[in-house]
Length: 161
Picture 1 (cartoon, rainbow, N blue to C red):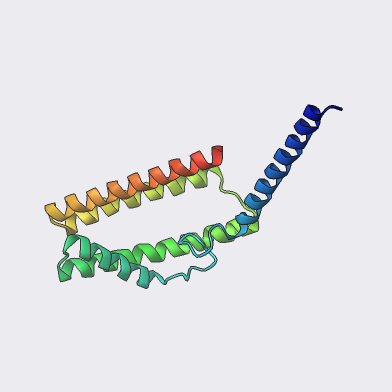
Picture 2 (cartoon, one colour):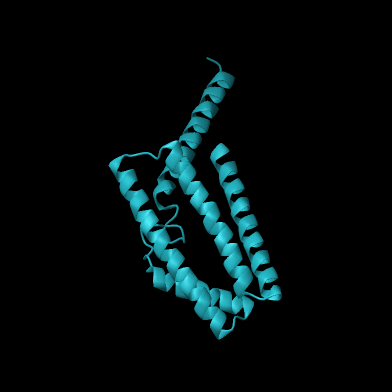
């Protein structure tokens, strides 16, 4: 073996070791990737439906300058919706833990119910808010939807890599 072939073999070994070290370091990082971040579900305390309704109402009050009557109406609406969501979530969780899957009819009924709830919410907010507040509320919803869509696209890009 001449000196050039020994150098080539040595370069290949160094490259292989560097690649193994990089893969090992990347694999070690996986456990703590989401530690301390907002979406670390193990650490989040769950609020009661009333607490969530109060926070949602306060957020809207800050954004839309709601009157006291509007605040009371919206808080009652959010409390009702959050309680319904909690019961639906717990029933779905129980079904999931039991290993049951929704039939297509159940899925259709759920989607239909969600659409009916969206229509009712739109009617409620149209009735409760004035025109200026309603326009700002719809703009907030659009921004939130865009943000979620963008986040979803970024996640898709990451998973493709």
